[in-house]
Amino acid sequence: MAARSMTLPRIECSECPIRHRAVCARCEPDELEQLDAIKYYRSYDAGQTIVWAGDEMDFVASVVKGVASLTQTMEDGRRQMVGLLLPSDFVGRPNRAEAAYDVTAASEVTLCCFRRKPFLDLMGETPHIGQRLLEMTLDELDAAREWMLLLGRKTAREKIASFLAIIARRGTTTTDLGSAGAIEFDLPLTREAMADYLGLTLETVSRQMSALKRDNVIALKGKRHVVVEDFNLLMDETGDDADGGMPS
Image 1: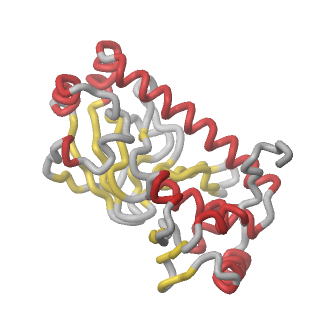
Image 2: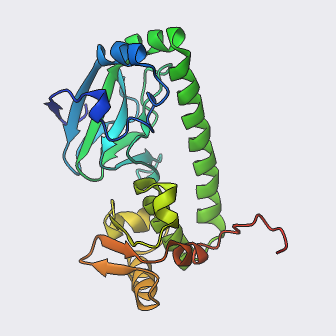
Image 3: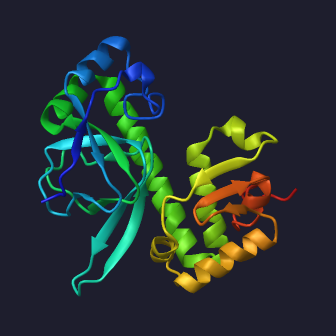
């Protein structure tokens, strides 16, 4: 069974920080009212299990605040982190009753939950919800392919830079990334968890973070707060070919 969570007061959709990025992004006011009738909020402390793989899920949800990890347990008992759920990401599958992965709160997490069966019925009646969920599923597939490249081909420094860029992008808008101001964010994972997620050792993560700091790619305030003065400089360290291989 999942760890006990705390039910929170309802939040008005108009005041929701993920309103224009989540599964409800394209909904009209009357569609939001239908979602509002089946939604509720849950909060989890860092380290709490939201759901275990194989558990029956009677809800689906959007991450409103915080970060959760997706973990797969192998036959020999080893555990591998296979993904992260960031604000606006979707938890669960409307057509699947059982959870495919362990979902654990990596930080304090707030979920906007919908009862699964009514949500599935609403998808059939509300094309905007199904269309948006399809878009998010395809984005998730793209992210998984990107992560395969990261784990298989990139150097340790490129892996760390790519991870930082992903977190920075998800916490800001495209306009913010292109502006002259600094980007600041808190790392959602400990360095031990980063090592697990990136397929590196703890020592390598610490060494590469220090190297990026020494080279003025990032600044660190404490262990978890990151400042990126020049996002383009960070992107240069990711190993990504921004022009798609076309000659300049």
